Length: 328
Image (cartoon, rainbow, N blue to C red; front, top):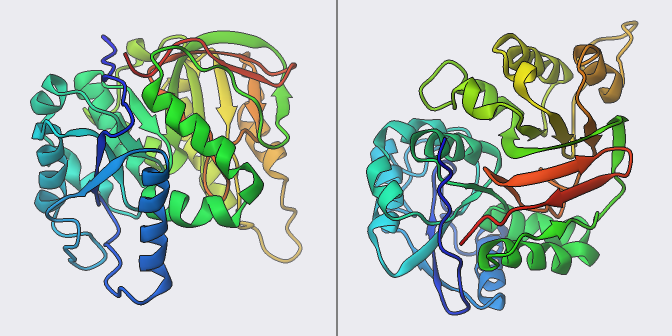
């Protein structure tokens, strides 16, 4: 696969705002709308301008408009020369519906960072598989920049914003990432490879479709994943899906993010394993190093995890090193 890197951003550049899943806050007097405003202010604090998509405020059921309307904003942002990057307002449950309506030839001709995580993993994987575009697994505008980064680890927010700014503006590798919290080694070793991953449920939702990269393009990659607010059995199921699809046979390493609010699967009298034991039971025969509790995912200030760039991990040294830039 030929990796497609977008041009780096500069202060004063405009970032477009789209909604791929959850609707825009309808009530301008409630906290949700204030979170959106705070997210916009954080982008402005970094020196960027913003431009809202024309369909940003559409609502249909629990969607931000129809799939065609949501994808229309994405396509418009890639066609607009004023827009240098695109950030998603919020996650949700329905980004997968826009994939068939994205103009991938347009994206390939006008590569720009597309920023978000969680449900947005679907869009990153589709763009990566169809065009080779680096996927910017980073903060959501409202959820992350407007709420979570201030609520959780507020003393680390500026460090998170600096990493976010640098991944968009620096054509030089970020190098060794300084942990924001304590990381863990779940299987010792070191490796080098291309970063690939996202939200575990979203990764598995695209297995077997044209929007999931071919296995040979993932040979030697470092798989990263996170999840949140789910049942423990879904983690086991998701990892087994990746195993049965052959993904775990081709990777050279694994990086696991934060796993907050995981609900127990069992009931009274049934033993519930720790998340470590559950995950390592699935991965017991794996030979690759595993670095866990790394600073990305939900309910944390998150480091960016770009799909498609070269990285190194040394789980024994609790080290993650970006050896390649995400922009040119």
